[in-house]
Amino acid sequence: MTGDETKSTILSQELLLSLAEELKLPLIQIARRAEQAGLSSEADLKPIQVSADSALRLIDSYALGVRLATQPENFELEPVSISSVLYDVGQQLDALAKSYGVALELNVAGRFAPVIAHRQGLQAALTSLGATLVEALPAQEYSQLSLQLATHRSRYGIVAGLYADTRQLAGDVLKRGRHLQRRSRQPLVTISHSNGAGVFVADAILKAMGLELITSRHQHLHGLGTVLKSNNQLQLV
Amino acid sequence: MADILLIEPDKLLAETYFLALDQAGHRVMACAGAQSAILVADRHQPELVILELQLVEHSGIEFLYEFRSYPEWQDIAVIVNSFVPPSEFSASQELLRDELGVVAYLYKPRASLQQLLGTVSKHSPVKA
Image 1 (cartoon, chains in turn blue, cyan):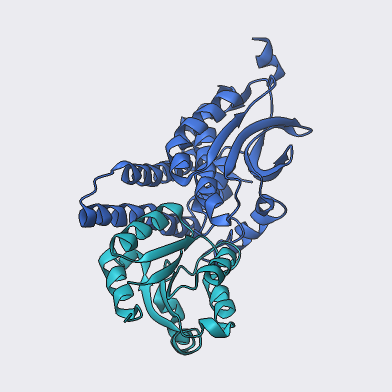
Image 2: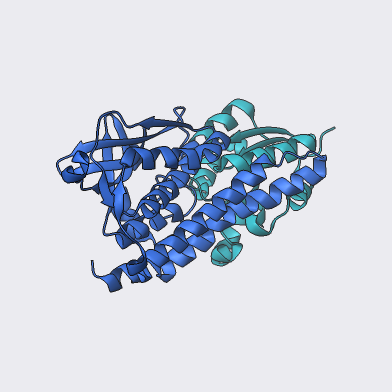
């Protein structure tokens, strides 16, 4: 993909529209929760904080994606430990996952060489992806509400992703979603009740970093993630 | 006060709507999708349905067609409370109202809890 194509992905009207639609959800959650607190004189502010943080995280990820695509010269690559990125993603998603009743599990067993990547971008993409999946899992009506942040080796490199016991994440769900993004209010209809902007923001951030969002399997779970090339020289450092 | 089937896929919004309806004295059965909604309706016989149209896999419209196919559920009022703007249904208002029994359409970003409670109150069956 050329630099111009990467820019057009993150700056596309479809993605902006997706983002605007997606932001309605946390804003409605905040507005209605505040109204409910007023009606009942109950002042539990935690749900409001979680929704506000969710909205801010999505905007911030999108803005980072735009900067990565438009000013790549300002972003330096560095040796990154995937396990540590996944740990940080888990921390970022913790409060949201608790609110949605989703158990987050970190599965980074095994030693992996560091990869050369833009740490902040990788973390933002995986967090954005994770937030969408956390919100989507309860809507899929599965009794098993858990999301695994995991990494494994494949013949293409090291795969880092988010996995759940749901067949909805399998097959050509991404391909169909990308195709439907400009045509449908719910391009990822088998995954999410919203328009899944978090997935498309992650897709755009990864593209801006020369990576790709893919569907992947980890043990018996299905998920979304990206493939990173390990650097064996760095492992010796 | 009514027995309400709330079909809301977002867990946080469902909790807020549940609290508001519960505090207003209604009995609420909440579910996230169309399939479980049919099962819950069968088990609990709701008097009113609040429905989001954007659900995972089966849409709210699919739910409505299935729901209305059962003779015992023909007269139960359905209030749509959705992210989908009503303007997207401007050509099918009659279908929603006359065939699928939608008594009110609330656009979620603009509909306050007070409006939802008022609409529920207006369309709740009168009990002796």
